[in-house]
Amino acid sequence: MKNSIPAPKALYQQVKAHILEKIDSGAWPPDTKVPSENQLVKRLNVSRMTVNRAMRELSENERLVRIQGVGTYVARPKPIAALYEIRNIAEEIREWGGNYSCTMILLTQEKAFSELAVAMKISLGTKVFHSIIVHKSNGKPVMLGDRFVNPLFAPDYLKQDFTKINPSKYLMGVVPPTDIEHVIEAGLPDGQTQKLLEITSQDPCLYLHRQTWSGEGVVTHSRMIYPGATYRISGRFKPVFSYHEPSSPKG
View (cartoon, rainbow, N blue to C red):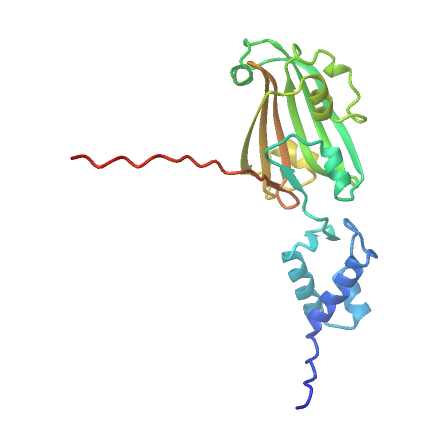
């Protein structure tokens, strides 16, 4: 029996293989801008349609990120935000190989508005601390943290340099929570979020609402916003089953 000769790959598959070899070898690390379609057409001596199909499929498989009017970039591995715990975003970014940095947008004292006062179980107009921070990986925004803090539990919150210590890590050291509530929803970003996360009005986001308690007192009321295209949220837990003895038949 003769050995069969494998059929040659289609041209678009060869282009995909070329791009993947560059990515997997580390020649094109995450967030690298890849050559344009025109450049690849000339470099590989194939048609524009062939290159377009290869790049489109690699984008659908989340190996490339195509930004209209800007270019195509090597996608970073989609990180996972912990659902059932509080993790340090700086440590998460370093774990997936990114270089962490952040930009402070706001760090101030304010008066609690009605919705916040109800959520934090405090009186309307009570003083609260408010911080807004953009967390970045390799210089690109990956999460927007908007946090209100009860000064009774963390009186020195405004004195911290959160470019050097992560707010979650600081708060965990000052007042470890006894209870944590997470609520997740998806939605489109408002104007400020678009600007701070460098996304468009059509880019969906994941909103993780977090509230922490120490005893009966609410310590923090926070909202973490993640670009949905580059982030996912996951949690693992052990199911608890309840067992009821079957009732005896009457009669």
